[in-house]
Image (cartoon, rainbow, N blue to C red; front, side):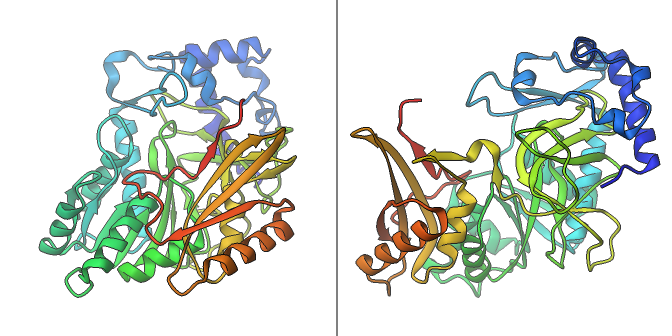
Amino acid sequence: MSMREEVFSDIQKLLERVFNQSPFYGKKFKEAGFRLEDIKSAEDFKRLPFSDKDELRLAYPLGLLSVPQDEVVRIHSSSGTTGSPVIIPYTRQDVEDWATMFARCYEIAGITKKDVIQITPGYGLWTAGIGFQAGCEKLGAMAVPMGPGNTDKQIQMMIDLKSTVICATSSYALLLAEEVEKRQLHDKICLKKGVIGSERWGDLMRNRIRTELGIELFDIYGLTEVYGPGIAMDCECHEGMHYFDDFLYFEIIDSETGEVLPDGEVGELVITTLKKEAAPLVRYRTHDLTRIIPGKCSCGRSFPMIDRIIGRTDDMVKVKGVNIYPGQIDSVLRDIHGVSSEYQIIINHVDGKDQMILRVERLPEAAPEDLEHRITEVFKKRIGIKIDVETVVVGGLPRSEKKSKRVFDYRDK
């Protein structure tokens, strides 16, 4: 997507702020040999270095701060499961901007102030729950701020308060859908829509949640470093997720070379925040794989679109010399009759060779040996390697109230 003049004007204002007020970017750009006056065009902007989560970790706790600390009204943090957490500060305006984008997300999904929105993602340092709630309040709808877990209570509230919208990770939405099915509560719930985010999910899982809860599903996208969820949203046409180009500038790059790719090509999403005050980000590598969808959506909205997230650059595992993404597993299983949506990949190194086991859930009508044989054959044909397949009954793999862990790599790194 070529950069519009007004976007470059926003970028120039942003760069002026970060060169002068962000110790993090001031140092980074100076070390890379850039001065503010060097950035005169969109092409010059493409020469600026990328930022990455590892650098943000090194800025712990408040090294990203670009305003006086007394202007900060809140902080959020990434989980820090793979190192120091990243702390992101927010000014009052940042909080307001995020709520504005989130309310837009609900509106794009056709959700109105008459809806009752049950919010199951976590509250606290994590950006999820509070983002869903702030957007809901800005929209004027009724929030039911449950947070994760306590499925009995979730279902009771869903029935008693007649919740019409469920906000959840896909893993927890599936768990709720299975419980509703098991308890035969379809005629007691009033759900119409699901707003699902925080992890990549395939068509099999999508179809199960949609069918078992009887709702229309909408993908929502975001990440802690860039406000949180609510920066891109699926609409009623389900052709892609609209992102808010008045707040954010999106680029898609080749993750190996860093080259900016044309619209329509799949690569890594890079985000620049145009209006963020407390912790602006310039050319931030998300590691999420998607593409900018060329042209306009059938819905007629002017916001541009990205495709569903198909995986992450760091999701990839290399087995027997072949690169494998979880998204490829989804596409293999989608075309095999008799499997449920849930799977696990277990990788070991045995007798000098990589060994991969794909564990999947089988539907009651499927014969285990036949199903295992069919999956092995299709996997070999599509992905190019021979694997071992184990099938278990539906419900035999663990369910999660947050995100599901699917890849277990036990090889020595």
